[in-house]
Image 1: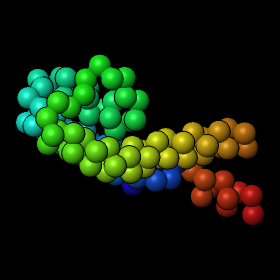
Image 2: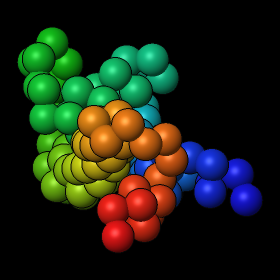
Image 3: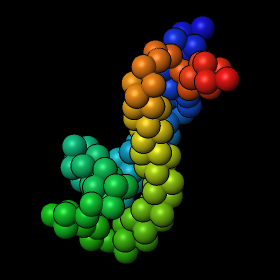
Image 4: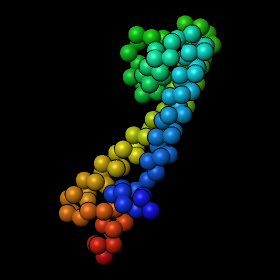
Length: 113
């Protein structure tokens, strides 16, 4: 029932869980394979997943390099899903504000009919 009160559609839980799983996988990869401390491994996973790539950390081992390529390809979908959810939420909220209607897009559509 609490989801009916949210002014947007979509599954915020799924978007956040996908992002947490990807960052956790990167944390495990970079801390185990590259021997980085957890804070640096998490930082490297975030920088890699978001394709920022500052270059201050990079994999040194062959396994780490292959793992980074695979991680980057897989993490893009989770980050894209999360960013898409945020974008859709902003669009839905802006539409609701522009129409002067509080509530979900479903309520907006019903009010327009």
